Amino acid sequence: MQVLIVDDSRSSLAFLGHVVGALEGVTFETFLRPSLALEAVARTQFDLILVDHVMPEMDGVELTRRLRALEAYRLVPIVMVTSDNSPALRVKAIAAGATDFVNKPFDTTELQARVTNLLALRRAQIELADRAAWLAREVEVATRHLVAREEEIIWRLARAIEYRDGDTGGHVSRVAQISSMLAGALGLSPERCRLIYLSAPLHDIGKIGIPDAVLGKPGKLSPAELTVMREHVSIGARILENGSSELIRTAELIAQSHHERWDGTGYPDRLSGTDIPIEARIVAIADVFDALCSERPYKQAWPIADAHREIVSLAGTHFDPSCVAAFQRMWPEIEAMLTEPPEPVRLAG
Image (cartoon, rainbow, N blue to C red; front, side, top):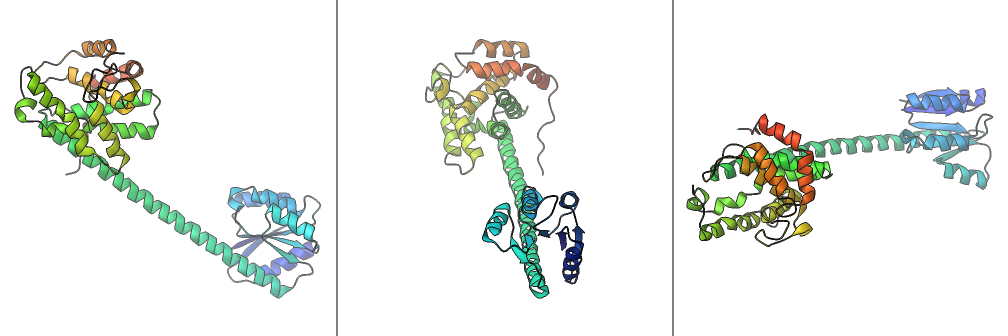
């Protein structure tokens, strides 16, 4: 444990240093001038400080106040050494941050006892802080593991959805990336962008409940078949309902509402405008755009430029105009992503 002693009297410094230095496991530094002591605390972390009250450069109260202003010395015990026993001084010193007082003339036994007790307090503070830091690190590691597992589950489900839908070309991965881009362009926080990125792959999870004959039909769906196909949003919402994590709750919103339209002509609830969750409005654009650019059993892939024009033309009817504006701002990055596809998401196993 390291002790700092500040006193403008050489004899007092010598005495205090002798008493403190006699304690086991304690080292000390002494300073005649408070300004030099302040320089010392900037380079050394002391565990206890003894300050004289009356000094010509600045008094002990002011020095205590300046020490307490330093983050590293918010909790370090500071002892005021003084021959003034007036209540007024003690109130000022305590207000400045003094922990205890030692009276002149010194009593060696009392001084050693006070220093020993205060260093024990400081040692306990350090041990508690170290324990808290260790716990924080352990929680951080555990959280990272949980997040990684959560992400792995999401992407494995997304892979299953793609196979069920007859598409192994990375549609859900591209929808996730485009959705994240749009969310960022709309000014959403990095945390919400990540939530949307991880929730978007589950937007069509309800298709696992749609019959193969409808899901893989190469031609146009009949009105009855179209009704069956549209049930995938409600099925998806039921699969994801009552989630305990924000990620699953966000995925439920997207699964339920990504086929709603800005003008209220979508399904299943005919929501319009901002009644549609922003997450669903974002994913709707990413989903339709990538679907247009992808080959399906019932259609050829559109040229990227044509799909881009289609999205822009549907602003204010099918899509939220602000989301389309974000799509326009991010178009160079989206076009580059489709021209040079990124590495697919790789899972363990």
